[in-house]
Image 1 (spheres, rainbow, N blue to C red):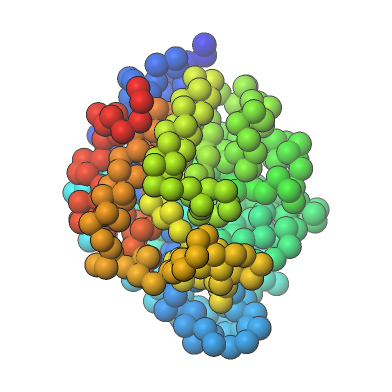
Image 2: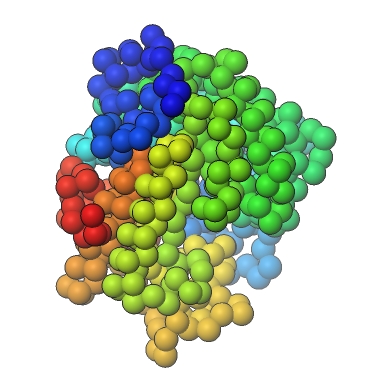
Length: 420
């Protein structure tokens, strides 16, 4: 098995920043037992807006019928660049504070995944997006170094949208790769991230693109892009690891998605328990068993390529306001168009209000947290979505950990919720 020699930068990362080699060393047969896993959080809702994370930014359109303001593209298009610039600059300077990073360090989080859109890095002048994100990003990278944390820079939005979700910057059709300029612009954005990595030793990995949807972009096209992305980033920043999302493909197709010769890579799978009807209807014990089963899948592929769960939460309902899209309801209570309530009388009332959780709900959340971090540490680790939210408590790591739902430190290997 090929083992990549440590570069001088990687040695500095281990010695100067005090992190493990879970990212620096390619997968070995027993990597899950020999390196400290990634134990991270996402800094979501910062450089790519999501209405459910920061509903206050979208509140003025909450009762406007058929409003186009459902994502960052349209947020800026309706406000105009001057007003959008003013509002987002305030947001970039306030949503992530040094105290947040210090708190996460105290909670023994070792990794930050930072989503950012192409428009911050390789903008198209005809797009409504605004720029100015990079100084705020660099400030966070400095804090990461100060608190001895490592960083994964995640290209969360690609030109034309790689999945049609609002978290790509543009909700609607999947147009990424459909225009001749899309791939070159995406690679330009990744090159910019690579140059940032070279100036900031806390950056140990770059994610090629978040959640490309295999139903809108063919698997073959995604694989070809992954090879281009790997070569582009490595030509500029050879010390960083490249992260590839599984494109929502089943584990049986992961082998052919990421070529074996992309040796310094990580496969990223995202596991949620509320977006699929069959899963949201599981009872408490079944949610735990599913997490444990997912961990075994991750463990199996981790023997071939380092594998992480790069997004998960403790939500077992989709009751967070606007989680399914701005002004959209929930499957849980049947308020999402086309859905039926999970059960008779199912209600979203207080589902995301930790102060109102019953003792039974808290006990389930604790077990669910324990099961997931134990399961995902059977691979190379985990990254919780999100570090905080304005009102969705089962997605708010800082609040969950402060209330004892996650342990400090959050060491999954020592737990026994899932069968060994």
